Length: 488
Image: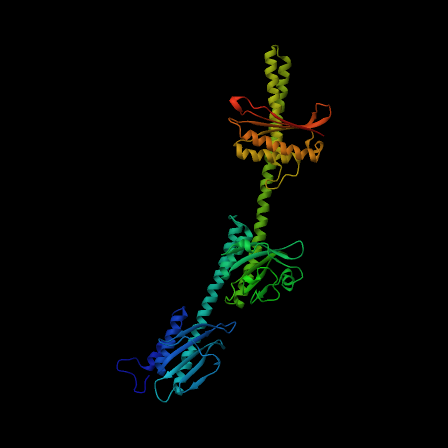
């Protein structure tokens, strides 16, 4: 108030002070409350300018300045934040949160000629105490909200991984962690054969390819900590001598958190921020470490679930294969025996011929069913390791282009009788023949035969590939079979 007292109709000093005190806790957004406290301090003391500087509680840096109307936002350097300054034209007191200095409330330019009084100092101390309460409440609220976000993020990752959501599991973890930590990138590193660690998944607003493949060399202090399952917290990636990756100059503060579950180190989750960004706080460290533990467990559970699903597929395929073998093939074989008996008893040559053709068709069908049984017994996602499996893979690939599956027949011990070099050449010939047949007009059937008991024209034992289709060539002529053969 001015020396002449409050103006008529103006609120008294006590009412202004009470209003400032009562507003504490009514708004979890502290800036408006702090602005009101600064305005109240200037009004109660007659100061021209009021400034409240707020410090980062973990690093002691100035992070926010709240001013009264018309005040300059800068705080003069060199003034101690934890000291009380009482001079004719200056009054400053620390702002405390749970006994720790978190800022300073500073007034300048008192209008009265005698300068700031002891009563002004007491008023300012009360308001600084209220500012500390406001900041403490806001920080508690923000800490609770931050914890809630990390818990929700960990739950989202677990749900995404266990429900089979599209996308790579490691990239899902990296992206969710990046968003929660307000990081410039989220990356997952995994151990290499050489003993180092390599970035295998990345999520960033820039091109992830810039980060993929970057490695931590073996023998570094950071790597030793990570392999031991210990987190690493870095203030500046670009200048920290422990950092050795080629991309370290792109980032500033960083957290590197082991992904460890069931006694197994899956990898490392790294969350670097941009150069000059605010450092991570101890609360960030704790919440991110908890997230990494939850994400590692989710990755292990997702992998186990995928294994169970693959096992269920294998079991179902085995069941189908058994049914085909035990029921279908036996019935076809019995039918073939009946037809052979009927052919021997038939009187007319024409009937015998027709029955013989029926027997041949049944034998071909049996071969196709056996081939199907073999295909069902192959792992669906693994590359085939047997020669028979490689032939089936080529025909299956052609089926995607043709719109139908070629018929495949094997004769003889194709796995043991055909040498590796002959297998390679046969597969190349098969690939060419299927490609040629797929381009013919009117093709609706392709028959592939691999005979490991063939006899070459010179009498030597050999292997023969025959590919026949019903397509037409120039002027509607029937296409000739493709035959490839080699000695065994």
